[in-house]
Structure formats: structure tokens, C-alpha cells
Amino acid sequence: MKIGITCYPTYGGSGVVATELGIELAARGHQVHFITSSQPFRLTGREANIHFHEVSVSTYPLFEYPPYDLALATRMAEVADFYSLDLLHVHYAIPHSVSALLASQMLASHSFAERRRNLPFITTLHGTDITLVGLDPSYLPITRFAIERSHGVTAISSHLADRTREAFGITGEIEVIRNFVNCDVYARQPDLVAEMRPRFASANEHLFVHLSNFRAVKRVLDVVEVFARVARVLPSRLMLIGDGPDRSAAEHLALRHGVQDRIHFLGKQDNVNELLPLADLMIMPSQMESFGLAALEAMACGVPAIATRVGGVPELIENHVNGLLFEIGDVDAMADGAIALLKAPDRFQAMSQAARRTAQDRFCTTRIIPLYEEYYQRVLDRNAS
Image (spheres, rainbow, N blue to C red):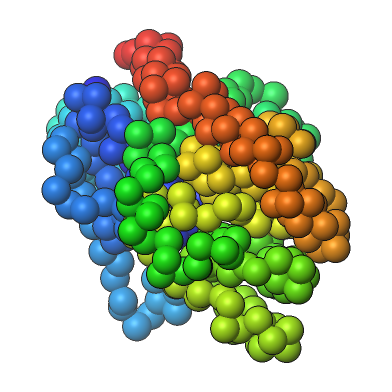
């Protein structure tokens, strides 16, 4: 197939999933065209069967806000026409599904190209495009309209699919295709761990990790609070991977607790698959997670997560089996749970193995990517002109 993919190319779950999906599809022989404002950060530019098409936006002084959604629709239509794409797959409803709808309508019109053609598009819902942005009164009607006009709709968890039906009154099909991880790339390699781990923690120290875009919904301050409580009891260090609005507040909180010299603020990193296996536990105390991709990537590396019982997280983490679940903001319980687990080596080892097994058995690319391929074909078959 020839597939156009649009996503936000920056750090964040939807962009990561879209990029990894494109990489996996290309590896399976499909021709993948990324149509985005800049090259997605997980692309190297050297992958076979992957093409990148930049969306350029006019900076004409009349426009207070550059009309990116219109420029994107035009570029989608141009790329689809020139390369004879079979379908578009857009990630995050706003504004990508609206732009895809416009592109599809343009290609069906004689005014755009000499040969009218049918171009189906699929919208994948990732979370805040539904639970936060999409519910804003300014965007709710257009979000609902774009979802209803999509030729196919997928959601990354059953929770998100149910939330979309409830919040937007969607009655059409929403296919649940959960997030995935490449279990060969995200895996603990003992030699690499032995080489890299001493940079972040000594042999007698426990190492925690948090990975996010440091937005308020990720509750990075709770990460610091949990770690500060653990560090009073057990020799520990923390790797904070990512960057965003709450980084400065997290740094100030670390100073207040006197643990600033035990925290590594690593910023944005490209080698996440090498860093996650170094840790013993992940801390993911989010206000909302429609799935919990960061936890899945850690689990594939044999790193259980201390997480909150929100959204789609319970579809990934089984409490006391492959991770621990707590209520939002209960930093004392999270710290106590982490301490108790690390003080019980046999229990910790069993949970670590269960975390890896969950990723392999349920969420590996070899299990999820074929679901997307099958769904693409179903959408193409029922929209054949």
C-alpha cells in the first residue's frame, strides 16, 4: 500500500506512535509518506520506503495566525495525487482530520486535478484531542464533524473509544487498536546496561525513570515528590527524560527537598530504548493517560511502572502483577509501594518478568501492526469506487 501519515512531529505519544507505525509499515514493504510540518523526531531520514513531505505555511502579514490546517490540506492533496496514495492516516483529530477531509474532497473535484479520485482517510484518536482540546466549545462541533466524516476511526484504548462515543455522541464504528512497542528494540541488553548504568547510579543505588513532555497532565511534580520520599529510605537516583512547561517547577521542587544532586534532568533524548532498561522502576503519576505508551516502553525493557489508575492504564497494567496502580496525587502510597517492592527482590523480579511478558504477548509490533494493515484493507474495500 501507499500510505500518507500526518502527525505532530514533536515529542509526545501521538507523534511517537505515528512515527513508529510508519517505520514498521515501511519495514513490511509498504510505501509511507509523512506529511508534516517538520521531520518527526524519531525518523533518521535513512529508512527505506519512507518519504518526508514538509508542509510550509505562508507568513503573510495579514494572517495573525498562519493557516496551517489549510496548507496541510493542500499538501496532503498534492502528495496523494502525485504519488497515487491509497489512503491517508492522520493522528490526533485536531486539525489533522479536518485537513484530511478537505484533501479528500479536493481530490474528488475536477477543480484540483484532471483525474478525480477517491482518497479515504483514517483518524486515530490519541487522548487529549478528545478528552481536552476536542471538548472545548470552540472545537467540539468541528471535531465531531471530522470524526463522523472519517472513512475509518481508531482509538488507542477501549477507554478512549467509550469516552469519544459518550462525549461526542459518535454512533459509528471506532476500532480499538492499542499502542505497541518493538520488543526487539525495547529490551534489556545486559552488556549495554552494565556499560551505561554507572553514569546514572552506583551499584548499591536504585534507579527510577520518568519519561514525558512535562505538561501539567503528566504531574511531573508528583514524580519528584515520590522520589524524594523514596530517597529518604533507600539510596536512589532518578532520570527525568523529556522537557516541557513543568521542568522549571520540578527543578525548584527538587531543590526544596534537597534531592537535586540525585536527579538527572536529561532533557529530550533520542536513545530512549537504551535509557529505559537502566532503571528499576518507572514513575508515571499522570492525571490522565488514554493508554500509557511510556509505561509500555519501560515494561518491554523489564521495568515495571508505578502509575495512576486512570483512563486506559488498567488495560495495560494489572495491579500487583506487572506494575502498581494508585489514585491520582497519592504520592505517599506510591512511595510506600515502590519501597516495599524494592525491598522484596523476589517479588520485584517476578513483576519485572511479568512486565516484559505483557509487552511481548499483547503489545509487540508483530501483533499490532497486522491489525492496522487489516483495518486499512477493510476501509479501502468498503470505499472502493
